[in-house]
Image (tube, rainbow, N blue to C red):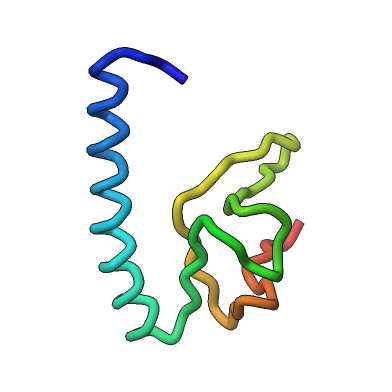
Length: 81
């Protein structure tokens, strides 16, 4: 991990913005009956990260995913191939 003060400051700002957006997205998800997936433990997926594999096989870590019909133990955000 980088040791520069600028990197640390960027991490602090990023963490703050994630908190703000998570609250807003949570309200949006509840209003529209969606499931908000965020990093952390979820029985429906392996690990703590929310990741997406693109059509080239590259993995992308995401901060938030909104799912129609999703539940902690069931994924519903699969896109058609």
